[in-house]
Image (cartoon, rainbow, N blue to C red; front, side):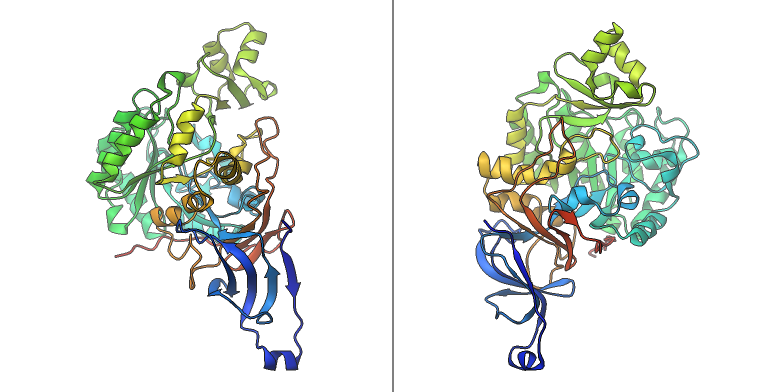
Length: 500
């Protein structure tokens, strides 16, 4: 299929009188998949300023820029609901890794770690070190972070959660313990202030060393303001291994107590002993979803990536080291290879490498496909932009869902795939007037070739750009074209507005 042809018009007075220009841009003859899950329709779509202005059969000559989009899919811009782009948006605001996938909005502050509120006087603790260096954590309030985003004006929209571990670090000196009642109230006050300043909700990362000591009662106190602000709670579960069902129950029970929606982050059955439990996990989620707002996101790979964790060290599957502070030269090898060269056991080798980053090939592809196929599952990349050898999900997650899983494996239709990364995401993360192609909605759009879309990033070449994305629009402005991010950036900070 041919790429879109863009035709800019210079109108004479006579032309304007005969056929007045009504729109800034018109896509003619696109296969429109609107993000609701409905099947594609062939239609023309017009934009005016930052909004979708008309859908239907439109008149040539009524748009300042007209695009022949026959044979291409026009979809809502993809919403990456699980990112760690908190500081990357300011560090590298072009955001090519996201725009080249068709992503127009990112959710930051996941897994209990966020850029704000934080003012570090020492290197960031694990896993806050996934986000950036000490000097980059310069936002003592959520409002300061939001202001920095607005000044950077990144290429994509941003909505942000506040991390529980970040709050803990702001008020505690020993993160290996539960917070005292006084510390819990300080965290609650910081969360309340952040919600007043536009935060989307609270995230936790209870599996990590610096949060695992926090009991549910601590989160119940800290998260008490969430319902008042129509906010949400997302959780990197306390366990994704054998204890996954109790961990899911803990998150669901906390949501019931707080009276807020719950999103389970990067749902998985981790570790070889846990493979094959996807059906059991989804049965539990379905039962709880029948009585409360309880949903999940997932990335389309059978390998995870995070900091190196001694609890996850095993010989059952490959562990690839992506960085190491004390031994940077060891990056780019497997843990087993390093252990052999050092003539040490795996666990001792891992301990010497830390702090470090790792890719864990610890999931069953069958489980991953079951989680992806579950209709309420959203798509999130969980990419780590600071990693010198990142997991390929950073550059490939969304095209991989559309190409590999939808088109090639036919796990779900193209309309269902797009719903998982647009309308469903906007609904669960309370992003008003985004996520669907509808008159009056913001014009976040992606134009792509459904036959050619393909992720190229892999574990050897993780920075490879995907194929098949023709153009991306953010708030009506052209953001990605011809394989490149456009110089004008149109992203906005999306302050959460409670629906009272």
